[in-house]
Length: 365
Image 1 (cartoon, rainbow, N blue to C red):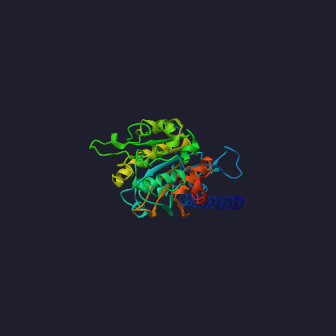
Image 2 (spheres, rainbow, N blue to C red):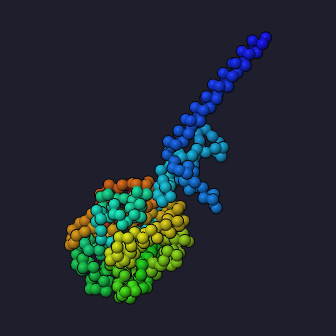
């Protein structure tokens, strides 16, 4: 009898030893899989004061589990970040914001060490890699981007003021298409729909507001709306744009014109970069962007060169649906801006916008 008891004890010892080995192996495999997962460290981040998930972008119920029973972390289907691609539903963009930048070619923007924030947006969101600006100088490009019409001739190609002879137009534009459902926000502009830069200077007496970078002031068929809808920008803590972003009341189309120091025209690359670094977090924190309604285009008006010649420059698209590090290689141009705005807002395509490519497919808008 004692031999049988001893045999049973030995068998149980062997069984327990095997079970212990299995547990250790499973643990090692689990740790290895966790370390090899797509999630970054920390594995899951939750905002302490609100309980809101910070990363990964979403959690999904594991296959076969009832709702709420348990969740699977770090799923590979999550491809977004806090700025872009954090929604995987069908795009529902109903608002567009265009932020103008000035006079730089692709080669002087992409990879420029003085533009760390701008370059981070290219990888966090989407970058055009085949964008062409039609002409020089600034004004004809701004007009083309908002109308689908070429203004590559006099007096437009002299960057004329709206007060100059022949330097206004009654042509249709995205502004006229939208009635009052648009707004222009211009930094350092002294008053609504200002057609004269003389009153807008910095502390050194340098001109800082340029009407040629604020295209709405050139369209005579929207002059009454311009007087109400084209307003001084304000700051990142107060003023027109801050208020509309905070209240979630941005219009269907908003154009944002930094002043001549902050759009890289007269200022440095670092100034332009810091301006974006100040404003983009404010805009993307707003409910219009977070809900997926708002898409943002940061666009340069032209690259290097002069006269009626094309140039290569870039645009950065940001939206809740645009996957990080998207490279949009479709051939696009000034008229593509018009087309994309009209397509996203359900407007008829004007003039040359009808025959060019849109940005919507490349950037999942």
